[in-house]
Length: 341
Ligand code: F6P
Figure (cartoon, rainbow, N blue to C red):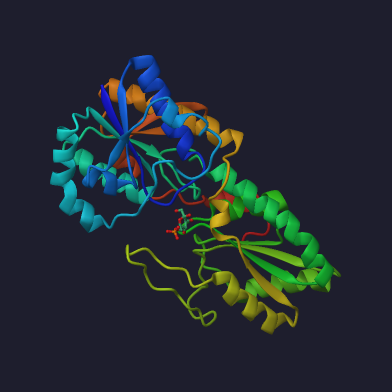
């Protein structure tokens, strides 16, 4: 069999572990050929690729980023590129293509699969918002980085009697905010799923200072927004891919809370540090299992499917089901923490 693999969309710790696992399972166990496309879908559309053998993936298990490079492609570029993708898959003699990516990539994968291309998807995102899989690799690493940062920020917040508003990633969902906030014992957690009330947040933080505490840590997901009319709120418009651009909810909240509480407030935007560096053991294992199962799916002809974690088992789910909606944080999870607004 001849298999093509690519990584697309925002990178995430564990991508190299999947690529390595695909090569190990396919080349060593099945005697397949594997090629890697450069920079995501661009590589497939332009037939820009290289051979992936055991040497190519030696030593990459624990590395961050992606050895293949990644890019975002606008949906219309891909729609226009379906025929080119089909031609390139045929010309390269590929029996299967394994795209590893998040929501946008998996939607593109579904489009190509519906057009008859032999696709097996592998989900990835630090945001953990892909439906049909309990967890995506990258998430555990991101939560660890954010938790470590929150632990560190507590000491400086206390020294200066400040409110620190820590913005974590999470475009549409508050998984990283919830988990890191819980792990670090944050005093308030703000998630995109629930537009926040500035009055309520001011009250929660104010109560803490009134009780004699010297500092407060607020964790806010980048995609969180205030309830309409609650405060002047800048939004950042959209980027060249049509994705929402963030205008810095932490920065805006810091100004607002400082004004309302008369306490020093500082925004801390963790940003891409959450996506960089070595994956945790959990993410390496999940990524490795996804890679193994993606190759098995290709050999079994299970095209149009995506690898998924259900409980402790890896299963296959239709791409169509996986991209139907995002996996938001269920309301029951808020009830377990008393500080989600
Ligand atoms: O989807 C993963 C993610 O890290 C989001 O949390 C974040 O909003 C986005 O990617 C950032 O994307 P970019 O690297 O293109 O700015």
